[in-house]
Image (tube, rainbow, N blue to C red):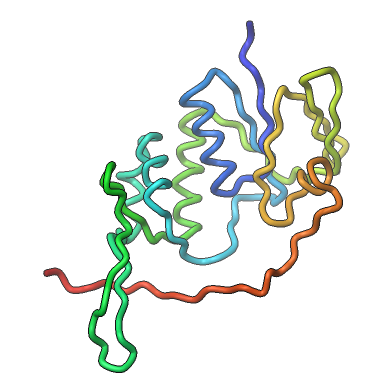
Length: 193
């Protein structure tokens, strides 16, 4: 039986990690279709929790990620009045020892793109998804704005909060809305000791 093909919409962090995982742990051949004409990312630094560090480790990418990241072993809680440390939240997985990593999104995406190239994963740029439809049982077709179509066994929507996959196929009536909640925090290096 020939290997399955998978269509991944979106070359963000989740799309890249999914493609790398499929190449490493299955016979599935993924192809990533990205809306933008070249690799790009929005946003600044992000915090990768220990489970993400574990995923990077399983893909052989943790050491390279640590070279371009700051390791976060705990979040210190400090008094605004005195500046004294009053507590800490551990950011280390007790069982695996994996820590959190604070990393620039663009640097991480660059690392993942190099890994995709090494793994032989095709990335097609400038491919705007217009529609998704099921054909034969167990097959799906992605239709692109340029008239191109691609048929595969599975299609993954890794195209973010305003997902075209979700809008065209999964939940067409559901729109992203602001919940009214936000979070602000910062990270700073602490002296050793």
